[in-house]
Length: 268
Image (cartoon, rainbow, N blue to C red; front, top):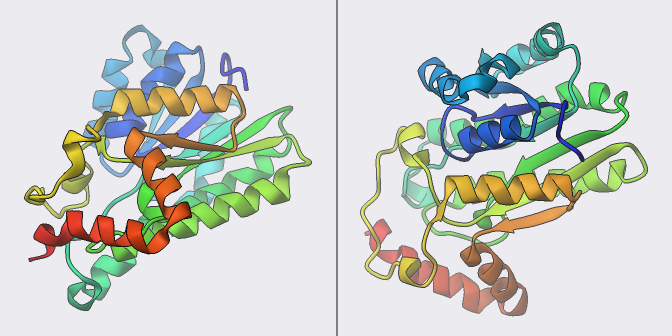
């Protein structure tokens, strides 16, 4: 997709990868409907747009609220006139605890934002995308969506659901004008822990960050934008995500034990 003069919706646009995606899209000449639950950070993103701020609209919204999402397309169309693509980037993680210690409220919150939020946005806008000359759906899964991560099992389950949802959409839409991409970020420098209201976990003594440094959010956004421009169906951001995808395919048990070792100190 050539992004110039296209209107793209980005969830989680108030910070992290979502903010960088928004700014990168504006540099490509696109208009952006920026969605986030935090009004203050959304307006910070708009200020960072500088001279391009007339091409960005901000919409404070909880994507887990189905009724609010159903009303969003009209709001976007009224603002921009059309919609050409959606990037379901918003996501939260769970507290770093085992399932036995994870409360139901946290479970519902993670599934609500990560899976249902992605599904609601997709359902709301897909009919409009199908009417455009070219449409695009990008869903951000996670390395944890194809590899079990102890202490983030429900988060991983939500992102695995996003993975299969997106792959199903790809199959259903392959003969249409709507392109579909699933993204598997590895460790990325964002404030997702703070935004998830769980605080910042202590570092693991066996952290693999020396081998795989955390990817800057700006770089992750650059990789995703490139994937859209090239109509790639699947993209991995970060060497750790690429490596673990290969390792898990070759030897799932070894890969699972490897990750468990990395996470062990966080769960004590």
